[in-house]
Length: 78
Image 1 (tube, helix red, strand yellow):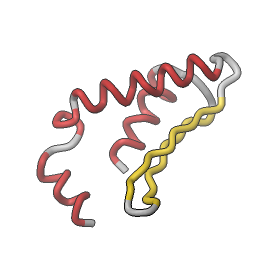
Image 2 (tube, rainbow, N blue to C red):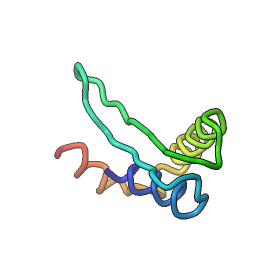
Image 3 (cartoon, rainbow, N blue to C red):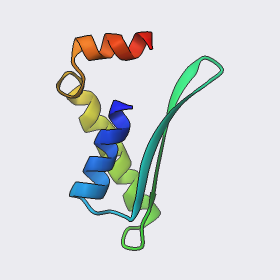
């Protein structure tokens, strides 16, 4: 939930990579996954993938900035 908002804000609002930008978390066989997507007429699939990977790396580097420990525990238990 928190990552979805950050992904949309970064790629759609700040970088303007495409009209449709989304991120969705789901669980499959007790593993948590996050699906990222974007529709763009100005960026190639390779460039979009690079931007997705850069977003994930920078998000994880600053995870405590994005999610407080209290918020993490709330999300974990929900």
